[in-house]
Length: 309
Image 1 (cartoon, helix red, strand yellow):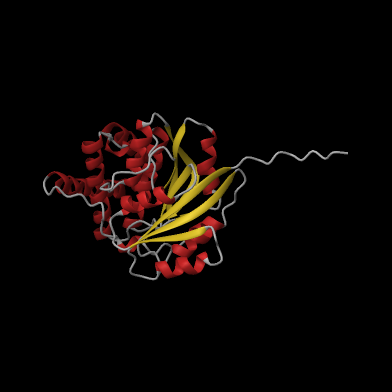
Image 2 (cartoon, rainbow, N blue to C red):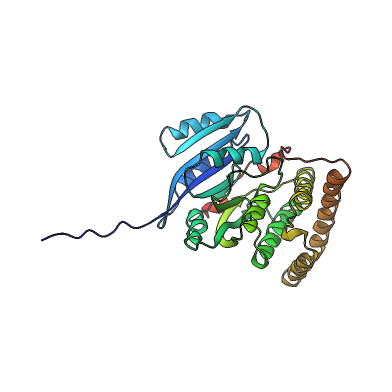
């Protein structure tokens, strides 16, 4: 009797690009988390680490890890030319039609890849993004500020998809602007221009670490404001966080949900206004474009104990 074999289940295949600069403290935890993903409908074809002139042990650690994980490979840039440049290298080398960009200082939850990629079963979806979850101690002022900003990012993305920290997208372009300091927002702009949809996936968790001191907070937020102004003026794309109506609605919701934190909230609002003022000064007066930005050191020692709970 002829045995009829079931058809092989179709899987969505993706390539992951990890963009790294001096990530020795986190890179192995990140790569292990990617290799250990819980996958059913999705298959990871390759994990490409693009190392931008790392001065620590990042390259050596990746090479050692790749010896026992053949899906992992390393590409080294001799000079650091900014994250957008590193992303373009990944775009050139990746094989899959669905691509994922992840920062080297983050860690995905065990099911994040599955949740980010399965929406692409719908041909109208052009890009997806998950929910960044900071590991900072929320009891401190800076920890509260970091959690507040990402909580606002979440509220905002539910209204108007805004993608950050880790983004999946269709291969419908070959490069992003090399001088972009806000790579995820630049990809958002390209996807929307292609008449494809952005989708926020709030249960696709990406653990990250925010600044732990005021200096690093200002450096990071100032650069982001500068990059968003560059994107608006050069490519006519306005991110949701630049919409005063959306921001007012989100602040109002935050006050209603956490009235006991109102003093801290207004302190953080003042901090953010100060950073945006500095970022605007950098863009309009200094004509500065920080596409190869200074790293905020306190964001690098990511402790993924929160993920393991």
